[in-house]
Amino acid sequence: MTILVQYFGMLPDKLGRGTEDFHFDGQLTVGQLRQSLAVKYPVLGKIDYKVAIGQTVAQSEDIIEEGQNVAVLPPYAGG
Amino acid sequence: MIELQKSYWVEGPIESDQAADLIAKVGEFDQIGGIDIFLGQIRADAVNGSEVTGIEYSAHKPMAEAAFDQVKQNAFQSFSDVQSVVILHSLGLVEVGGLSLLVLVAAGHRDAAFKCCRQVVEEIKAQVPIWKKEYLQEGHSWVGDPDRT
Image (spheres, rainbow over the protein chains, first blue to last red):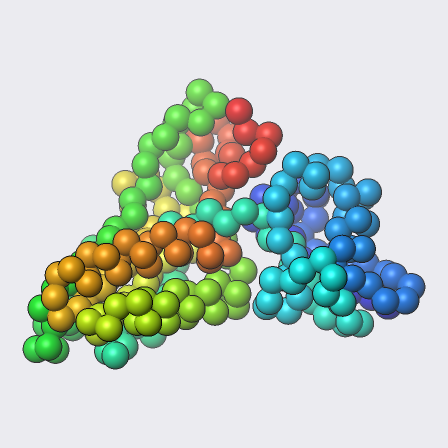
């Protein structure tokens, strides 16, 4: 299955891209996506980021469905 | 509850006229006795030995708008005397000295206005997905970047 991952804040600068398609076989959890991201982008190991599915911050055990939009959100800095 | 705003976002700096317009609007409601306003202004910090000249704001807009809604809901639940909460936040570039955040709380009395305004500002900083890219005299730097020295 394919999911669209969108990077926010400093991440497009750090990773060299703002969005990316990820392809997986079988069921995918947020924790598994985090593991894939850690392998592909070691710099993420230094950043305390959140993962949102649609518009909701997700937990590691949450399942990502085919076609869902996923957002990777570094620490907030509004104001 | 009195709704005084149509959008949370301002492209570029928030102008002082916008604050003045809000104050005038609040004046139309005679149950309001205390108004507290917080204004966030861009400061010329030194970063990596270079001075900040401006900040560019970006956001996950749908999530940020839902978070702003929640912050306002929390405000009304926490302070029954609060009649209106206005939040304006900049997107895009705001130069040093410009305003990037306005929070206005209108209440029956000052105590709720003061306390609620503080709560709203702190919750915005902690809960709303907005990011800052600081432009420096030389280069730029992201607030929260772990590689920043």
